[in-house]
Image (cartoon, rainbow over all chains, first blue to last red; front, side, top):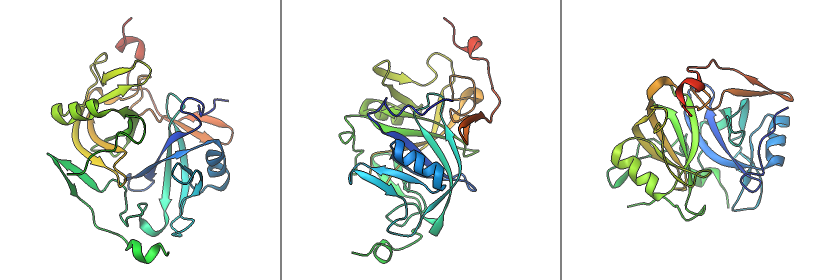
Length: 125
Length: 125
């Protein structure tokens, strides 16, 4: 059995979430071993929040869970790709479907997407 | 002008390469500021190799360059998404189109793709 190489990067590996149906890349976050194992067990995406220094069950506040359809591992066994169904239609806390909603154009960044929800209504104080 | 936050992770940010046409996620690598700026300037993907500790012009050995169609930046400005055209049809040094050629199935990893090329023929000693 091959194992994810959590040691290479100090316990955390990058995890990419991609919409299983449309192929849109939704976000990139981090997983430690505990997050990875809970993701496999529950089939809901669990990450490790570096800023909060704890497990981050995606959707725990917004209700916008990610149902995990497939878990893929790269050639070096140090990056994870989740194919997910995004509840609520948006992965980004700013209300966009994808966190990658800005395109580099010359010296500027241009917003290329429409908001799916209003963050002020989803995230309560 | 918004800037990529290279300082957050010690000078390196994750960069995801996605096939611009099919939407297949090809690979994840790292960029420092120099790699990012050269990528924008040349419209070919340039990463920073942590193992070789130097700029890695993707395709420099294999000839399998990545022509960059779009550069996207995430909400936290610390992850980059490249939409690319992959010369040679395969991004992975093991000969697969995508580095994510294995799926987690229970306790096993199953190869779910066919090789596009034979690595022994592409990478000479």
